Length: 135
Length: 455
Image (cartoon, rainbow over all chains, first blue to last red):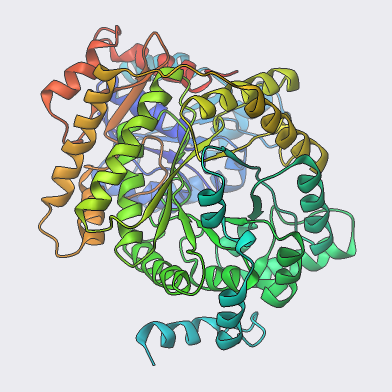
């Protein structure tokens, strides 16, 4: 399966980004890593370009919320109904509870939301989700 | 008029530069005190590890006060760290933030905005302290900054097209960085003929995240060669504490020999090569006493490897920019530790040295075999192809094929070699030190543990 991944916004957390890349590859995914400082438009372009199955966006400095509000709008531009949208990392700038954050991001158009979840645990969950939800 | 001078005239014609008088600057450098030149201090203080802290504040007054603190602490080399707007050539924002810093007590910049202060003002401070100053920045296009620095009396310039780009930038064009730095080398070489030489220094820590010594050494020597071929006569190669004492000792031995060998290979036997050691550049413990212990360990290793200069950290490293008091205290402690470290054993590890030397030579063979016509293009192509590959670089040109982990003695080893042109023999040596099996799922946990090795 093809995954597009990267860190959204003006966020230079390169170590986490590389670790996600290495982990996905070790689990047999074909990875297109757009790296740090990536804009939402660039993610969508890449998904369309390589016909990806999964878009995995990460955000470490919490600025994802500002960027990802536009996701639903962008989804309308292309037929992306077969793509699984995932976001993970630190999803709020201040402190916020996971109970608040998950529904909010689901409304923005994400299928899976991970707020401060361990990398390995999160990837296990993604693999299970993919198995159960062959779109 | 030379092409170089024509370029410089254009570069200083900038709304943030107050009339740049090249003739006056030349006179100043010609007659400048020898005590301002680190190249001179290296010659006259052979055998002493010179101590240089880090530091830069936005206003003239705070910078001056920091230098006073350092002088009391017994500093050998003063730093001038440049703010991040200036590093990105955004002098407008730097001017605004400088004004705000001057109007209030809060520092709105993370360094000294040298372009905005200008060389006439800054020179007063530098000549007052009459101590070598090192320019620390991170600028891909440092053409204006370096002319401004030398005009101010700053005769050591850190950086280079690779080491100031791959760890810091996602998409600044690398080929442009090579050409901008070529200009910087020419300027440094030109001034080096007037008095003592300007010293250039490369930034060895790179991403400070599990970079294997072979890659560090290759990049250090690449930047050295690019500098020497333009006529620079004094150059410092550097690396940072790896986390293994033995690996640092081996790295120092190999980088010294290899730097000399490759410098001679391009006919630069007359160039002086110095070795600089950076105290731990990774994440620091949040316990300030532990931080001091880590710093002492770094100082010990610098003495073991006989570094010509050590660049210090402070006990407040985990908490942001240190106060001048913490910073001065660090200098004092490092000087004390260096003074009492006597009778150090001479440790040599021939097997490790042989392997590291072979890795370096194998990578250089591939770089030199690139069909491009000039050295910078050969290096540029090598980076594009992953022959040079920096772990955890955010830059889009970096290949990201190399994966490294620590062995049981905390040495950084190459686990996946990507496109690194090292032989099977070299790779097997690296792999033989690891005991990880082939389950790549666990590798990520190992890497996380290895990055946080000092926490």
